[in-house]
Image 1 (cartoon, rainbow, N blue to C red):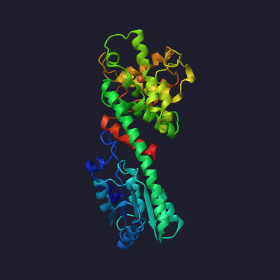
Image 2 (image 1 turned 120 degrees about the vertical axis):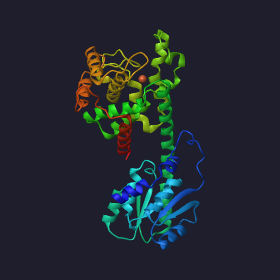
Image 3 (image 1 turned 180 degrees about the horizontal axis):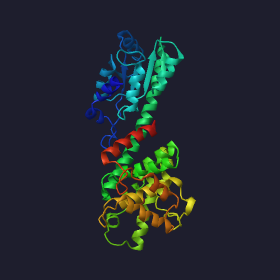
Image 4 (image 1 turned 60 degrees about the vertical axis):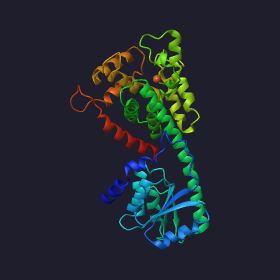
Amino acid sequence: MAEIEAVSKGLGATNAESRLPHWDNAFEEPSQAAAILIVDALEINRRVLNAMLKTEEYRIMEATRPEEAMDILGQQSVDLVVVDLVMPGMSGPDFCRVLKADRRTHLIPILMTTGVQGTENEIAGIDSGADDFLLKPLKPALVRTRIRRMLRNKALTDSLDEAETILFALAKSVEARDNYTGLHCERLAAYSIRLGQALGVSKADQLALYRGGYLHDIGKVSIPDAILFKSGMLSNEEWLIMCQHTLRGEEICRPMKSLAPVLPIIRGHHERWNGSGYPDGLRGEEIPWLARILQVADIYDALTTARSYKPAFSHQHALDIMLEEAGRGWRDPELIPLFAEVTRPAGDPTGSPWPADGEMQNSLENMRRELTK
Ligand SMILES: [Fe+2]
């Protein structure tokens, strides 16, 4: 385990971060030649693979041990890793686990090779996160076909990942523009997942809540500043425009199929239990389940953070207001008491049940990794 940690730390954050799809480089032209990293202790094996791939236009890099491979991964963009099951120091499966547990490398496909016969080896390889497995002696045509297919999938994953990264960046810019305090999106994701887990929602729904935490207000990008930042009451006409952010947000995210489960959250997070909400005036259980969960988180965050027109309320004060609103018929009458139950502070009953921002961000990132596996 110490070896895994040491190798994982070897992935230099600064260099590796720069390989991530960012707002700045999301539209860069992909390089012509896919980069393949061969990790194998034996020179003869590396040479054989090199020879097999010579007919294709790949940029081949080689490493003899996992630590060396990590250095390369920390400095260069790699599209596919070919790794042998048996290596000195750390096994192929352990190396895979390190790559798949790190958000900077978890999307790189891994082809594991081995000369050791036995289904149990294959299972160990796949279990560790390897995307494909080939037995030696390697057959050139089979190696080329598998690698071509894996690279095609990687290109697709990259484009989806970049599109989602762009939407998340846009959502964060909306959050900043809207003068929310600190990590509003992250808190919403954390609060709504906590409530969702208490309700036993599926992993897919938890992922939708995570994404909804970021994307629910993305439609505010289309609301004019004069309305979004107006300090006084909105006129009826202005209010109707403001209400449109739910529909605009749905339109922005609709083209991405992976965001289909998030659309009902974006559209429905301002509906009210008694039908007095917007945009569709849905009532009770007509309001999508996940939208109701996110709404609880959204209101709780609005109450517990300072805004220009109010101070930050304590956890208990916020719950009291939400329970009162549930009594008025605005909120799901079962969700608010459940939220109060699952967020009961462990020690001091007047304290906050939530960790500090940094700790919450880390645990949310771990959760995201778990949900996107
Ligand atoms: Fe909203």
